[in-house]
Length: 47
Image (cartoon, rainbow, N blue to C red; front, side, top):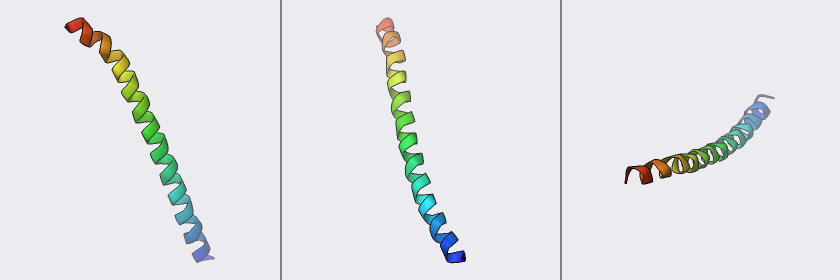
């Protein structure tokens, strides 16, 4: 029983880690694009 719990815990850990990384990458990409879209007009406004 204990081994089964440990095994399922490891599988869940791997899954949640992969999901977390996927969401993290997606959020970073969205923030990067949003930052570029917001920053571009102000950059052109300065020059």
